[in-house]
Image 1 (cartoon, chains in turn yellow, purple):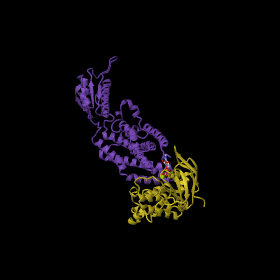
Image 2 (cartoon, chains in turn red, purple):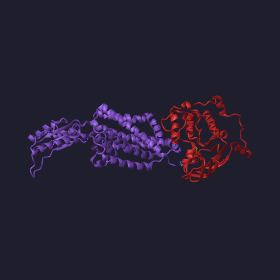
Image 3 (tube, rainbow over the protein chains, first blue to last red):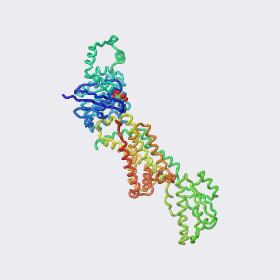
Image 4 (cartoon, protein in one colour):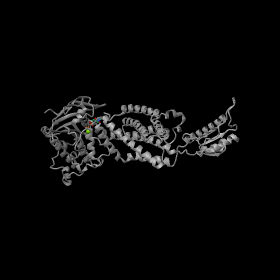
Length: 252
Length: 364
Ligand SMILES: Nc1ncnc2c1ncn2[C@@H]1O[C@H](COP(=O)(O)OP(=O)(O)O)[C@@H](O)[C@H]1O
Ligand SMILES: [Mg+2]
């Protein structure tokens, strides 16, 4: 199967800032692909170009078989997105929010089934603005699934969530992948990338500096003779935290 | 079309849940109407007139007697000096000075006609206008009587245009106009700029939604709200103040909707230009405040300083208020107010062009 996302020599600058400096990569259908990097690396710029929301300065990009630059609407019809910074229309319930986005795609959907998929069915009638952070992220994923997208783009989906909510979201993402949807996510959490992603691209200052499955990146590093200065602990503080507070999600 | 209707249904539902927005679009206009209506802040049912009769002859006595007999006028005799003091304290609406040479007789060639001097309180232009009109009519009648030897009566029965008009009847169309303006400009500008700033519009633009459909849904939402607002205001005006609406309700609502569309284009232009929410109130006030004061909302549009009246008479709200008032008060038809409608349409086209130029969902 041909790659579902194909990026060639993509460039973008804002005035003096070269945010993306000619990156090339592809994403296989059905994988969870992670774009990993520190703040300001150019992750959001890259995904928003692929989503047809920003204009690139050079290169080419093809998503779900559609050329992004010449047919952004075609891309938008085939993908689902969760933006890093966005909000929903005012004064709607969770269910109405899903309906609103279905209307944006001019589709009829089973809103409750979508909410059930993200474990929000009981919150269907609740005002969207009154949902907790984790619930809002899950609602956001529900709205991104209304058009049964071929690729789901998630820009830092777990930033700001507590450990339970993060794990819950990971399960959700794995579930989406198991139903055949390709997932393209950005993160600056290394554990998240390691656990969730089939392959990760590490981005820094507008360049992709490595791209491989997480395991291979680690092995390569070890093969270069790398050793951790301190002995690897068998558990870390997060394990303690989860042991004490449980894996149960708190805001559901 | 289907997309527009679905988006509209949800936007309207959201809007109706917004207590603050509803408060501003219904309670505030009602409060304005009730306050101005009950306190009769601009009542001109009674015009207080002082007369300084310097002639003290038969003609002047006749004039004073007739004026005293007109129920709209509350006449007292005062010296010019006393009356002017009272005028300055706005205890009087106007002062009529009858000159020494006053006489009701056919003017002979080469002779100057006696001049009545009328002082008016600038703060109460409506009353002064009515007072002047009455005096002018009385003089006309008296002159006519002399020249045509017809009886010197009939003045009391002659209804000067506007005299029978109560202040609330005058007020209600103005309240409608100003609230159409406020609702259209503020609700669109605030809501869309907030959506822009919070990233709602970006999220929507990540879908293949057709932008004209989305905008149409926003416009429809406001048209429905505006219609509801007009209906509630009219209902309250009818029930509470027993307001007389001489013209038809249909033309009134049509003009109201034309006005809404006009001010919506301005709202969209403003929303397009502004990037943060704090910019909105300043510019919106800049646009609406002058119209609030000079477009004849609470008082006659002639309350505007004479110097700027050529401009204020062409303001969108002045045109809207004129049309609403002529329909409501004088029973005008749509055809009668075609000049104002044409003006509103011209403004709408200008606003639309501006909105299209300025409106951007994002800046990337
Ligand atoms: N709209 C913009 N205008 C100007 N500079 C921007 C804009 N968006 C991002 N940048 C700059 O581009 C660089 C990359 O930003 P971004 O793509 O948001 O990175 P990341 O998502 O990895 O944190 C940063 O230096 C950022 O300041
Ligand atoms: Mg980012």
